[in-house]
Image 1: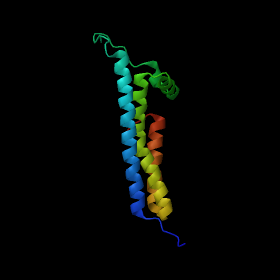
Image 2: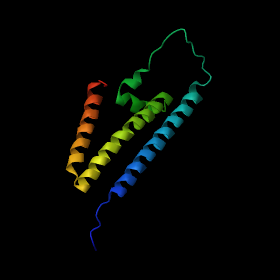
Image 3: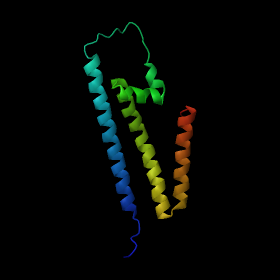
Image 4: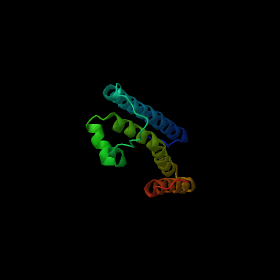
Length: 128
C-alpha cells in the first residue's frame, strides 16, 4: 500500500467539522440549561429593585460541574458558554496538529504562539 500524504483539504475539513460540532453542542447545552431554568424558575417574580449578583457556583469549575450534576439550569447554561468559548481554542490546537503533519514549522510556531497568548490571557485574567 502506498503511503497517502496528508492533504491540506483534509485538515480544513476536520477543522470545519470541529467548529460546526462545537457550536451545535454548545448551543444544545445552553438550550437544555435554558429549558431547565425556565421549568424551575419560569413562574418566579423578578424584583429588579435589588441586585442579587451571580450565584456562588459560577465562580469555579467545580461549582459549575456540581451544578450540572444537580441539574441547575444556570450552571448548564454556563457550561454551554464555556464550550462555545473553547471551540476556537480547539481549532487552534488542531491547526497546530495539521501544521506538524504538513511539516510546516513556520506556521506551527505562529500557531503555538497564538495558543500561548490565549492560554496566558485565560490564566492571568487580563484581556487585551
